[in-house]
Image 1 (cartoon, rainbow, N blue to C red):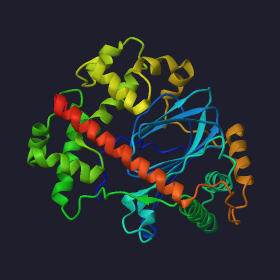
Image 2 (image 1 turned 180 degrees about the horizontal axis):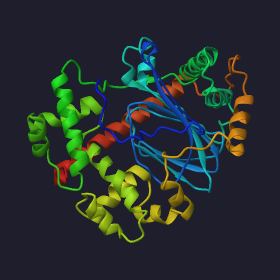
Image 3 (image 1 turned 30 degrees about the vertical axis):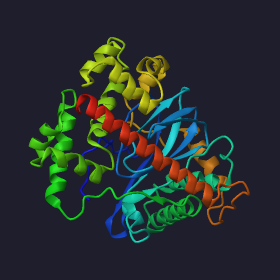
Image 4 (image 1 turned 90 degrees about the horizontal axis):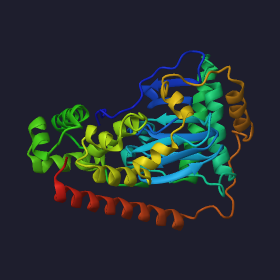
Length: 371
């Protein structure tokens, strides 16, 4: 599947920062790992699976319409192409993050693009052994990432294998409908053209007819292409792009909410409020009240500058997590750990939620067109 033109940081960390990128095509390894400070919402989505560990402060995570609040030690997995954003609820809220290309799972599962992990710790489960193992391995990887010797590189890859082993063993992935458009490079290029068009014209009214002209396909087929390639509908994708910029604009005190809505292609404030609340479980006004001077300062360098390796506090947090687990031992699952039946129930609930959202999007499209 071709690389999708989705918003994602392309920053490269400095040598003295906690930032590491590893690309080894022969081993199907393509990842980025870093420590960064969280500010306000930066709504995004990407083809990789994301593992996030809160190191300090208090962090709100919005992913797929679910909003949760997390403290140090919490582990969150965000699946491929799930729209998400984070918000600091306390100064110096810091996280450790890993982006891992799903190609790493090739040969382990029939279609890695279909994998969905249900992995989210809470106050009740934060101390469970599988979460201790996950965050401990992630921390060890970050600390050992800068050993460029052959032994150091092999050790890092071994940690990665242990991390994936722990994730798959204790949080078995469920498989959803395929998100790939199979066997037609022409259609993939057409979709990339449409994504580029939306990124440039999201503030305008966008119809299926307009996207059809851009792609060279019949308007009635455009929606099928989007759903098959991205796993979401055309309207949902356009709304995500609009919300991505709208969250940035809400940080400008000179812009009224009505101005933010108009500048980002929403037909009116009501439509903006509905879309914002559906994704973030709060209104734009409520979100604006949560923004602080600290988050604004972080936003200026968000994912452009990463936490330095000589930062004693960050290094201490990583070492504490790494020392809490013996990487050579298998974690013991507590008696109260979710059963396969419960995981199945969670999967069914998530699929039902996706279906409901799909019906809602179709009703909105019938009511007022795409854009």
